[in-house]
Amino acid sequence: MRADYLEIHPKNPEPHKIRRVVECLRRGGVIIYPTDTVYGLGCDLLNARAVERICRIKEVKPAKMHLSFICYDLSDLSEYARAISTPVFRVMKKALPGPFTFILEASNEVPKIFGVKKNQVGIRVPNHQVPRMIVQELGNPLVTTSVKDEDEVIEYMTDPSLMLDKFGHEVDLIIDSGYGGNVPSTVVDCIDDALEVVRPGAGDLEPFL
Image (cartoon, rainbow, N blue to C red; front, side):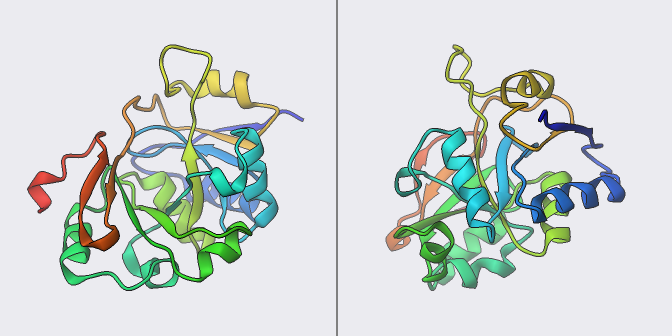
């Protein structure tokens, strides 16, 4: 079956379309959706089978998969990450929503979600209305990874219609909110309170330090 293709306004997402996306997620669906950087491949983090599907699509074993959580804000932090120092929290609060992924020490809840031991978790609060409204309506974060086209020189796919051609039989729904970027989020390792940029990307951390 071919994926549904849904156009959603990037600045003023239509509530009935957001509800349609959430219904798909609650059924265990896997979606492709926009962020403030590159398009993401995501599912409901409470659905283990959907998480396994994402790993199959990316052809990576769950134990090896680097997955992040898309959150509406930082209110879910205590559930998925262990105690965060005040300096790290202050930086996150200033930098988010924004094009950053913060790597934190995972709470005991995270291995239960993935079915394998995970010591770290990435936290994303994108500066984009569509994913934040999806998460808000869903009631919990999305598990996410980037949409990549490994066959092309350009690492990240930017055109949702081309994503439909490539992934249309692997995912359940593709959201078109216009062209995406091809620069991913900046990944910041916060383990041991180091705040080390381990992958430069779209965000500049310096102003928030």
